[in-house]
Length: 281
Image (tube, rainbow, N blue to C red):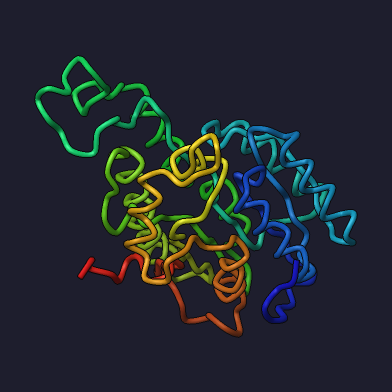
């Protein structure tokens, strides 16, 4: 991996949740190249460990921790381990999140004849919707409660949340995920104001469409051909393609670099190939 510009985070400790996934593991790797010590947190510790091992193999400092971001005791326990292993947190990337099939409709537009023939809005499962809201919102709030305490007396500290295009305009079929990501954008602004008298800055990145394990089945058929949903996405993305994961790194480094963004606070930055700007006409 090559980072687009030099940032010196030597001695800083970065905590990344959801670090077993495609995007957040890449965030962890990028931050390791700046000299930061990386704590990779994921419910799937083995997945996070694979990426931590890669960072260490390439000369970085990293360790994986199994952690449930919806369990404050789990977070507190991991926090103590990180304090012992690396020291106190300077940078928190709240990357844990996701959707659930129980909170997703089969149809984009409701038609009465769909009742009983497919999963409609009326069939959304309460537990699935609760899971999505909890994972995305509480899975950001609780880690922030635990790790932001480390940041209160520092000259510079940064919290970066992961929002989504759904936060700007809800996508069809995924009402819970769209609502949950809108909550993340709002919460980012709230945190920025709440911590504004400290040296903690809070911002968010709103990725456009990147192919990940979470969405690949929605975007591609089993034979690798694009689904109709992919056609709609690319038609609504002025640049006409999916993003490459590494195209998020520049925004990440900008936000964690005090020299570059010391007065940037409460922003949600889209990295989306123009999707959020395009009216369709």
